[in-house]
Image 1: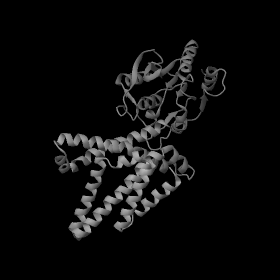
Image 2 (image 1 turned 90 degrees about the vertical axis):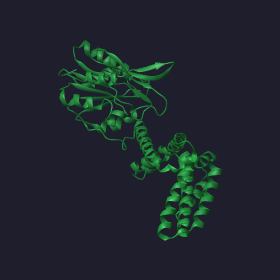
Image 3 (image 1 turned 120 degrees about the vertical axis):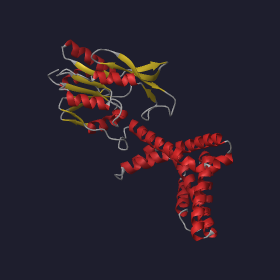
Image 4 (image 1 turned 45 degrees about the horizontal axis):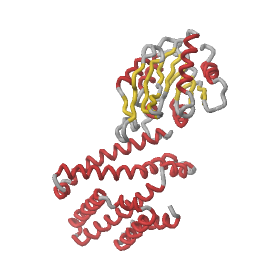
Length: 372
């Protein structure tokens, strides 16, 4: 955004907190003018019926409460001030949400040592457009079910619970989206992964060969008579695009489908995938009754697990009950810091497949220790 327009918008927001209605009215006019010049799409979003009705409802509630206590004139002034203030704040939020993303805010606040606050603020801004669309959809459905706009208006307070539920869903998806990019501080932290075994974390960019490396490791260890347990999660590629994942038992070779890509908003755990119970059951089965001294391979642990869901309970249970000879975990690069933080392991080696490594299999076997 142009620095002059940004300054004008900041002035409008500051002026909106004045107790004088004429100052707040001027602030509203200034904010709308800035939005019209800077981002007309954001301005139009503020004028959506659902948002306008929400502002009117809030202003009417304030008017009624103050009028009952201090008279109609005072109530109208307070109600008008509330409505104008909401116009300023809603317009400013819409413009900023389309101009600044969470990563930009996070970089700024990280320099000040306020990473968590920056993440919350950035995600809140990025979630506003989704909340706006959700409010519009909920209002349209409510009006149709009510049989008309005026009946819907009379039943408007009943929408509060529905809107709050959707707000909670959007907030959870925002936190999950942050976890997908390596920011897990807003998610529910899983209990530490406790193990005394040598632990190797394999990482690298998409397509770097992490799963093929795990397959080669399983074959090599099998040839040496070393038992292997755990699972792999090979991608399903259709028409050149990743459309889902399968899960394969590392010991038996059994394979079932774990996840399939779905339309936006229909996925589970805040992802764009629908997960199948059969896949999680195979994962649990692969982690039961692990022979002593086995090398446990987990391909892979993702943000879902690092938030305590997905395969995490089965992995944690396996590490508590089995005396394994080594642990290999595959994880995407952005999640390495979160995984290391969640690991309560005495010896961790990180193998990045993007590094110049002539024989990554030999590196991994050597890192797992002489027992392998």
